[in-house]
Image (cartoon, rainbow over all chains, first blue to last red; front, side, top):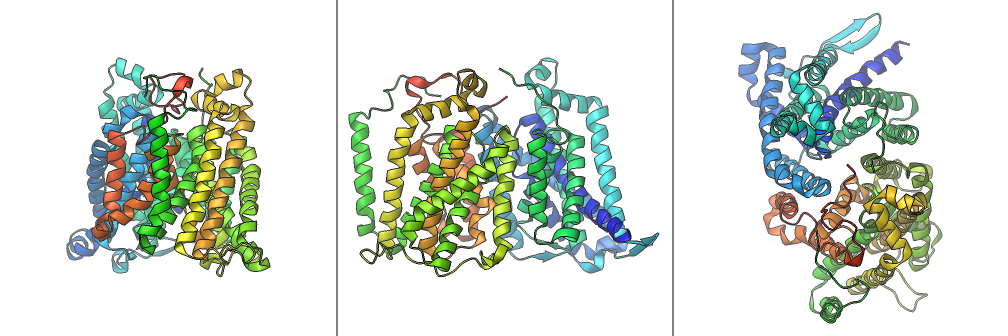
Length: 303
Length: 332
C-alpha cells in the first residue's frame, strides 16, 4: 500500500509539470484556436535560463538567499524572461498570421518551435546539461511510512499554488471573464468592449511564465535537461490538454495530473518501456468514448 | 482565395502542357548531369514528394488533421525490412505488400477514431504515430531490432534481370512511382471520390446532407494515404538498407504536415514545391552550419506571412463553394 501511495506522489509530481505546461497550451487554444507548438520550447528555454542563473549566480544566490531562496529567484527570473520572449514570439510569428486562418498559424508555430529549439542548441550546446546538485536541497522525508523528498513536497505545493492562482484569475476576476468571453466568441466580446490584444498579451505572458517555472522545477527534479525536452514534455502536456478537454482550464489541470499518475502506474506495474504507449492508448480510448475529452463540453454542430 | 474564372482543371491548357513537359524532361536529364550527391538529394526529394502526396489525400483533399503520418510510413518500411531480412522476399514483391500492410493498419486503427473532429483527431493520430514508434523501439517479439532497427535489407531487383543499386537507378525508381501516383491522384481528384472528399472538407454537414457517406470516405482517404506512405517506406528501406525508429518520429510527421501547408492544401504541384522546400532547404543552408535550422524556421514563418495559402494553392475551377473564404478547414 505504501508503495502505491509513493507512486501516486511521484505521479502527481510529474503530473503537476504536465498540468502547468498544459495550462499554457489550453489558454492559447481557448482564445486563438491555435495549437501553440512553441509552448514546449518556452518551457525548455525557461529550464535553461534557470540553469544558467543557478550555475553562474551560485555564490550570490546561496549566500544571500539560501537554497530555497535561490530556487525561487531562479524561477521568478526565468518566468519574467520567458514572459518577454512569449510576447516577442507572439508579435513576430503569430500576430501577422492570424488573419490568414488557423492552419498557416500552425506552420508558423512549428517554425517558431524550430527556431527556439535550435537557439537553445546554439547557445547552450547540444549536450545534456546538469543542474548543480549542490544547489538543490535533497532532504528525504517520511510520513506514516511513505517516503518522499522535501523537493517533491515543495514542487507539489508550488504547482498547486500556481494552478490555484491561475484558476482564480480566470474564473473569478473581471479580467479572467474577459479572457473567457474572448474564448467563447471573439467578435461579440470585442463588441462588448473587450480589448482582444490585451487578452492575447495576458495569455502570452502568463503561459510562457508558467512554462518557465515548470522548466526550472523539472531541472531541479530530474537534474538533467536537454534542448529537445521541449518536444517530449510539450507532447505530453498537449495530450493532457486534450484528455481534459481542450480550452478547458480545470480540465487541463486534471488532465495533466491524471496523465502523470497513469504514467507512473504504468511504469511501475506494467512496464517502464511501454509506459508512454500505455498513456497514449488510454488517451485514444478516452477519446473514442468521450470525443471531447473528460471535461470537454459537448458543442452542438453549427451549420 | 482565387475568384477569377479558370479552366476546368481537367483540361490542361497549352502553356501548362509545355511546362509539365519541360519539368519532366528536367527531372529525366538531371541525374545524368549532376553528381551522385545531388542525385541522392533528388532521391530524398522524391521520397518526400511521395509522402507529401500520401498525406495530401488525408489533409489536403479531406481536411483531416493527421500528425501521425510517419506511423504509416514506418509500417511500410518495417514490413519491407522484416519480411525481406527474415524470409528473403524480394523488395519489389514487397512493394504492394507494404502498401497493403500500411493500409490495413490504417483501416484497423482509424475505424474507431474516424468520428473525432479537428484537433481531437489530430492528437489521436499523434498518439498513434508515437505508439508505432515506441513499439518499434521496444522490439516486440524480437522482430524490430529495438532502437538499432533492422539491417541488411536487399536492393530491389527483377529476378536478376535488373538490380537497382546505384543512386541514379533509385532516383528513377522513386520518381517513376511519384509520376504514376500523380497521374492516379489527378484522375482521383476529378472523380466522384475526389469531389466527395472536397465536399467533406468544405462542409461536413452539407456533405452528409447530400448523401455522402462521410465516415466511409474519410476512412478511404486514410487507407489510400497510408498505402502510398507504405510504398514510400518500402523504397526508403531498400535505399538505406536499414531502418530504425529514429526515422519515424513526431518531427517527421510535422515536416510532412508542413509540406502540404507550404505547398498549398490539396494542390499536387504544391506538394512537389513543398517537398522540394523541405528536402532542399536544409541542403541549401548547409553553409550556415549550426544556424541552418534557425534559418529554416524563420523561412517557415515568413512563408506563412506572405503566402498563407501556400506557394501554389489549388485553383478551385468551377467547383468552389465559397470563393471569398481563404480558409477551407476552419471549423469554427
